[in-house]
Image 1: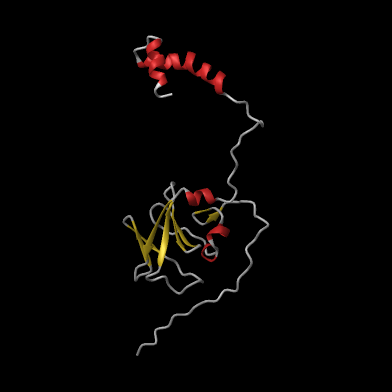
Image 2 (image 1 turned 90 degrees about the vertical axis):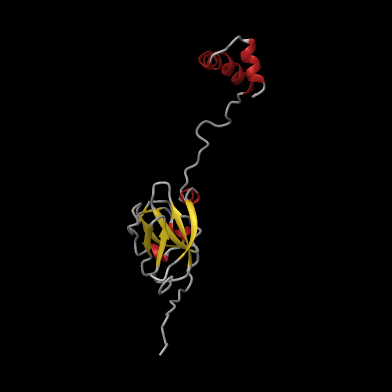
Length: 171
């Protein structure tokens, strides 16, 4: 098409952009659509609603960071404090993943587990339940508020959780 259109425009004697746009709308596209258009097999939209909220996790900027000695993650001039978690006493020197969503909200993940949510200014806005849920079960969370999504019948089996305790026994 890229090679054919300039030739068609020259044959029609078109020399301006306005005339080319008018010719495309009135002549070329109707002829093109008549030759190549196919009626849909079914009526309605082919788009499917994302009920799992996975698109939000896919369409965000994700970067790995190392947690500092003060249990914070540095992100674009912000210092994101990781709240207490039932999974670990602290995350010092752990590698975490920061999700930067298009709306400016942030989230920190450790493996599949969502540790915290932050507003665009870096202030925490997470729910205590959030830290205990893996990302796949967390669904769509925005600033600690879970969006109502239908649950799937294939629930993950409950695993026995063990808390680890770190003690400083140096004398």
